[in-house]
Image (cartoon, rainbow over all chains, first blue to last red; front, side):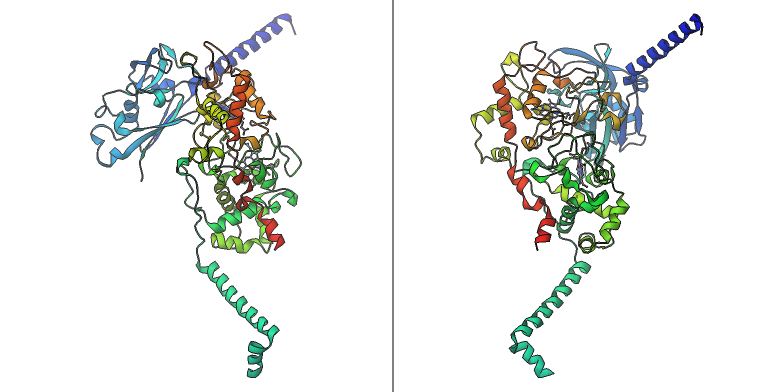
Length: 170
Length: 377
């Protein structure tokens, strides 16, 4: 084997290796978020798919006591896309619907469907994907709920992995 | 003939007994067939303190009954369910150790070692994702793993079914529990699950403290506060923040975290199940109930003593991409990187952990090996 081919081989390996690295580095981008339950169209969302929605942002004080600008998509838009009974359809038995949001670490929170609907609530709950112009860091992102009017950020659930709409059955 | 009959009945002492015995057998037989054919199994009432909450699901096709629980208990202690009739669930889950085995890794029927440490079986009723990586959604499905896994009991379920069918003991018990004496794989799993749901530990000193019937010592109270509080040096609040993951009355929240044991992983934990890189090295937060009885600690049993666990959280948290953010830069000193608990604070926390030992649980005769009493009868 000539010196030249050896060289080419080594650089090929290096190239492959660095490709491998970048793939694993960006693998967070492949994370998905599902919307299921009482929907007409279940959704499987990625960061890329989310960028096709209208982007909104909110300045709020986080757990660290500092103000941050969170950017993402209004949760209601995603629910509408999935065909959840919002707006004029949010009445009667549909008022007994809740939204269960689960995180990668198993953490779970609940919102009533009406709380998310702007016809009921004065705030816009967002599914954030950026904080201060940066993608949300590991452990917080890629998806996080921001509920500006909640004084305690315990429902600002990080690492959101699934959103399920369901009827309270009791 | 008639006279003889009368005599046997009223005068002759031994044959009188014979007759009564016969009658008794007859009635018992009627009673038994009656109860087997027509009577539904008796519902079993689960008892637990109200503060444990009712967030659990019992599958609709497997309601808990007294007959089912008893059968499950026999099966839990049944070696016929393993290859070579060598071990039972008990081999790795001993009641006196809150259903652990005191070993880092356990030996299966073929002598090989399990890849993870045996877990305590307490308050499983409230668990929704079983095993260290949460891969199993309910106890019915869970039981199939140890029964068939080669490192554990290593016997196909069809074989277990065949072995039990050959016994005199089991067919009537399956009939009593499930209405059919044809033993199946599903009935075995269901009965085991029923028994496991009854393994409730709720009578520790901590429970009595919560119920207002046990006054903790000063040290226990200090330990409890440290366990519960997040450290906040500005506000002069000292804490260890254990509650964040191990909190609540059941000392158990169904969460998955990387608690900084490793920076590179030989066991990827939850990632093996979810295939998501964010889950690398995450494991289920286990209950701390009876923790003083369940050493060695962690999914691989790496810590022999509880002191080492405290040292870990205080001094040896290892950084990695998935390390829980609740363990990063959490400190009792301003800008501190480590928890910075003092030696006596660690001892205080351990004294709180000792409050979680439930001696009624580990001695409850309803959870013990029923074969022993069967044999002595």
